[in-house]
Length: 630
Image 1 (cartoon, one colour):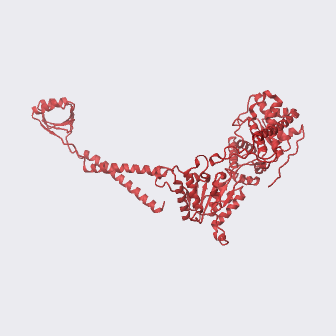
Image 2 (cartoon, rainbow, N blue to C red):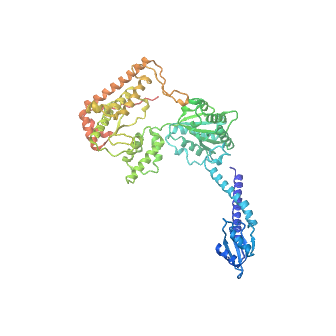
Image 3 (tube, one colour):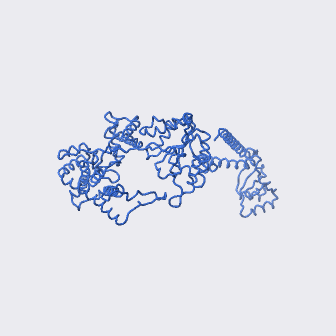
């Protein structure tokens, strides 16, 4: 809204308020006039109807004035001219009183109805409508200030983007840690905005769009704030869902309005968060798409790279679902740069933890490097939440600083769930202890399995009775066949321990999640990774999005006979791994019993303590580390 329009509205509201106050004063004066105009010095006494009738019959009434509505009368008595007032009986028409008045010759008159004063007429004519109009305008004004309120009807097609002329986000590139590659790419965009002549001199064009792609919590929005803060140019920010309304054409109108304002303030940045809300593939899926969203997307495509250019306007968008975006939106000329903002590596996690630990009190024994090693796969938001949870636990335990125990408990709380009270049922507790020891023992004795971090029988929220957790591997996505087989064996170790110790009849349902993971891994090996006797070949593809026109179920490119062979191969892999797990437990039965007794006593063992106990009975193989790089 322009400054001139704001001044006009302010003056208008001031005049309305002045008018209303003046009319209120006039009304108060008018209502008091009938009372002040009354100049009768004699007091009027009220008497009953019967007493008045008796006075009339006894010829003591000199004059009587009847109200026009017949409900009251004022009489002047002969003795001293005293005035009296009486309420009449209107139901019978006061026939007896009228007869007595005629018989005694009393001067009778009817009062004309009292007319309101001129001022009162003016007030009643203008003040009440003005008051109603004022109330209505105030309601509409309040509704118009509310987001999405009815008062915005006239500005329905206007953009809802937040505009900052100087982009004072308070975030600079030095405040963004752990994603150095993305920062380097975006620093070039900032240089484009600050020094465009440096690039145009050699024929380079300013990129029209930058798409930030990455999982949730990795810092995409934070990077956009840093771009605006570093460049110091006008900044528009909004979410993709703010374009789309229930009425077709509104989103396209908002896109036009947004880009027009951006061109008027060029050079500038437009940041669209969650662009997949408006940029989904067109004309696909059940029902053939959405008209409003598709028209909005068409308008955005035209504005970014259409017949008319938008020089000086850079669109920065963020999404964690690039697979659903329309291909026309991703091509060069619209989003020239597609920057992957992935999970931070070990060094990146250290930098992020240092940033979030600035306002946290940590004990001197706390090692940022140790926390970074134990949080593989954590995004920046996860690391911030981890330190916050640790701080909450420290405050709850009345500690002045965050200790190692709070860090460990916070990691478990974030990854697995909130710890519950220990179980009191010894029989159930012993079964869970054998189950978790089976996992931990297989993890420790298998050469290609991950390193054990901790094993516990303290239950967690969500129905978790206990867990055996391994230390995450930085190269977890580059697992070999031997590593996957050992992972399946470790997953079946709990079920194997239950069968070896308690027998087939006492096997519990605690391995339901383990069996689902085994089914997933074995099917992946056979049908997609070519790690079985069926040879090389991807027999199945990943399931797609049915609402994007893709298949709901995996595409099976094989015959029924091949399907039977796949099922047999999956069962064979799972069976062989299960036999290995049972053999490990059976051969180390005494070790299992001792580990269970210790676990029942202390309830939690970290990986180092567990390995020391195992080394007293058998030799632990040296773990193979993954060093494959592509």
